[in-house]
Amino acid sequence: MEKKLYDDCFFVEEKKYGLWSSFDKEGNGIITSLTEDECVRATRWYLKAKQEGEFDKTEQKTYDSFVGGKL
Image (cartoon, rainbow, N blue to C red; front, side):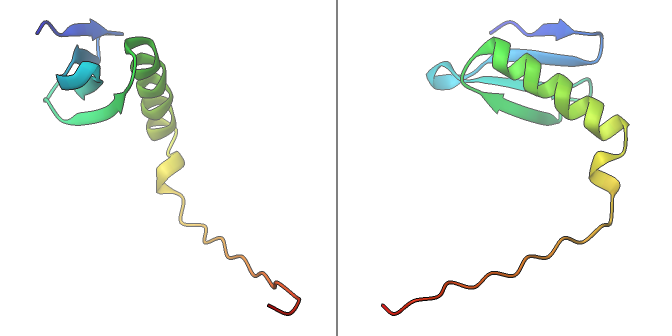
């Protein structure tokens, strides 16, 4: 199957069962999606967030919840 190069930085190709996967220039997998358009859109979002350091943040988020009532 033919790979398409997008934005001169990642490839997208159709895989088994009609799924679409994206890969960087070194061949590392990035995103798998149901459609080609969604794969391209999600990969662009992911690479932009990675470039901006979104995944490097060390902030810890904690949540606390309580459910009242008798079961």
